[in-house]
Amino acid sequence: MRRRNLSRVLHAVADAGPLSRAAVAARIGLTRAAVSSLVDELLRAELLVERGPGRSGAVGRPGTQLLLSDRGPCGIGAEIGVDHLAVCVMDLRGQARTRIGHEARNQGGDPAAVLAALTGMLRRAEAEAGAVGLRPAGLTVAVPGLVVRGTATVLRAPNLGWRDADLAGLLPDDLGPVTVENEANLGALGELWSGHHSPAPASFVHVSAEIGIGGAVVVDGELLRGAHGFAGELGHVPVRPEGRPCSCGGRGCLEAYAGEAAVLRAAGLTPGPGVRLGALTGRCEAGEPTAVAAVRRAGTALGIALSGAVNLLDPQLVVVGGALARLGPWLLPGVRRELARRTTAAAGGRSTPVPVTASPLGPDGPLLGAARHAMRTTLDAPGGA
Image (tube, one colour):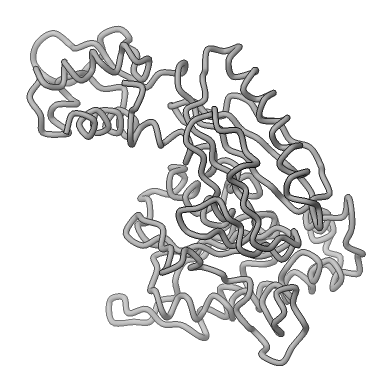
């Protein structure tokens, strides 16, 4: 019970801080004496810090304000992409304190070799974190594939060429609890926790697009995982059942029409090192017809795939993240058009399509979601307290 109450205090300060002890007590329904005892413990553990009195609006002397520490425990997020590796250190305030990334040709690479390179980056991030008074309290790794729920086993990652890859023994075990998670899921959690939406949607569909296309669903503030942890595989929803072959072995999947390689080829570009979806932004801004048409067709395909999810789940919002977010001005009209044609949502007695927006996090979503996930393990279970 005490561990749970410590977590409640931390989350209260994280959500609405800086707060006085009295304000925390009012928010979580405990006595001031109980909160004071919990706060003292969290101060000793370097999870909270105090600053000068603030204005509370209440009668009497203003109380000392509490806020999350920018030293002590931190979360480390890592991302394994098809052509890059990245690491981010995030403090308890949600600030990214250090980031390391470099290009790496991971497609078809041996998992052990890829994880060895990532471990080197993690050690460098750990050292940089230590130099500013931070110590790792958890590690979360984003991968572009299906991860068996509750394990570190990547069942299938078609764009990496991995099958049944157990990453548990390949990652450092001294950086706190280790979690391996699908990159689209972490992108959705990053969006949920970002604070970019006001009010924050409780239920939404998130699309994460890089070389492949991932999807994730948040329902009532919680990630929808499904029976085996594979919910949200939007990239392999057929948009043309007898269409192009896909890397997953199927045909006509969304990824074959709106994935990076498909869009680049449709725009007259040859996919390869240094040629990414970001290269299309300038061409679209210049009004190049081939590029604009390619992105618009991708938006149509994405809207068709999303229509089934929207009809089934009735979300408040659809968020497009990853590299496709940069192409929003040309991509999203097609998505909205298909959703308006293919879905309905009763609102005030008239049919209203679900809102669609581009994520402000863009390609950084999975990495920032991973770092925040690792950081939040301390808020949820303050083991150092």
